[in-house]
Structure formats: C-alpha cells, structure tokens
Length: 275
Image (cartoon, rainbow, N blue to C red; front, side):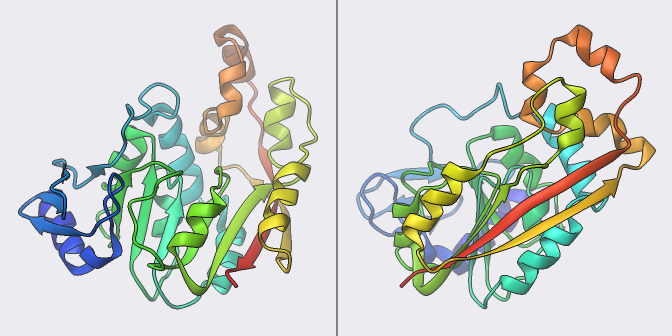
C-alpha cells in the first residue's frame, strides 16, 4: 500500500492543472513532494498527504478530533443517508469540491465521475480525512476567501453546513457548474438543542436569502425525517456539534445519563447553477 504522501503526490500529479497558487494565482508544478508555482512559492505535502495553503494558523482548538470522531461515527451509521442520497441525484459529471470537508465522510460516501477535493481550516479534520484510505481525493488546509483551485476547475461546489464565499465559488466553477448547499431547517437536531436547554427552532432565513441573491433561479428540496440513534452512538450524538461548546462540563455529565434516542434531520438542499 502506498504511503499517504505518495498517494497524494500521485493524485496531484494527475490534477496539477486544477490548482493555482493562493499567493500569486499562477500555476503549480510538482517537484517531489512540493508544489512550486511560477513565482517559486512553495507548499510541501505533509506525511499525511495534506498541503497547508493557509496564511494563518489552522484551527487546532475548536474543530478537533474530539468532535470529528463522533460525527464520523454518526455519518457512517447512516444518520445522513437520505440527505446524501438526494445530493447524489443532483451531482453532474466533473470535479467536486467539498467546502469545509471536515473529516471527509460526506465526500467519501458520494460517487463522482470526476476528481474529488476537500478543504477545511481544521487540522484534525483534514488529517482524519486521509485515514479514509479507499477514497481517491486530495485534502488541504485552505482559505475560503482565496481558494487554491484554478478558474473553472470544478463542476460542483458542495457546501454542507459550512460558510460560503460566492465570489470564489463563481471563479472555480466551470460554465454551467453548480453549487449544492445544505442548510439546517427549523427542527434540525431539535433533540440535541432540547437536551442542552437551547432554543429548538432554527432560523435559516439569512442564509437562504444570500443564496437567492447569488442564484435567483435556484431550486430547493426539503428533507425531514427522524433517525433512530443506535445505542452505541447516543453519546456520540452529544459530542458531534459545536452546540456542545455552550454547555458546562457538569451539565454534559448529567445529560449523558439519559441521552436522546432519536435525531431529527431537517434540512434544505439548495441548488444553483453558474450562468
């Protein structure tokens, strides 16, 4: 089996024309384990096969393995299977960019007739994504406002529960390419919110309005169902979301004695095409 760094180097060699330098926006060449642009800005592959394109420190404090592992467990247990099935039907041939890809499980579970790319600012997330050894993809630490991908290099930008930058999305999308964005709707994870003593209703109006501004002819699909949490994943459910950050350790221990047994998934899948 190839080492992760060699697997990533091979993938980059095949797709070098899909990247661009985030500093000077020129093209890259691959020299061993280093990406070197026309102006000699150099980015090295880590041992895990990840490139750090950030000009700031990656997040090692908030979005960590402690949160990503429970999330992966729940994704792989099928909690988002109907959502992923709906996204799968919307994918078109070509390259796919997963924005804020976290630990990579969403990208792994989608079939793409093109190449897969994911990025995040969370170091633990991209490193965990490289553990999904059956997946052919390239992961990086990248800035949403200055993506290291070439103009018109992606057929689909996938944006699941993460921030957007529509200027950059428009730049990297090929003509007729699409953004598929998943946003929480009113009752999303209401059991978790209730357990934590937080307001149950979620308002996605501002996010929806911003998408509509950029894609006036967008379509949306509502997905709403309950997922029976397997007993071994009920503690994972309490740790899978940033909502947990608002709760004291004392309260967490008390809630963990009787965790929710169901999870409501209520989302809108928005689809907009580049004109």
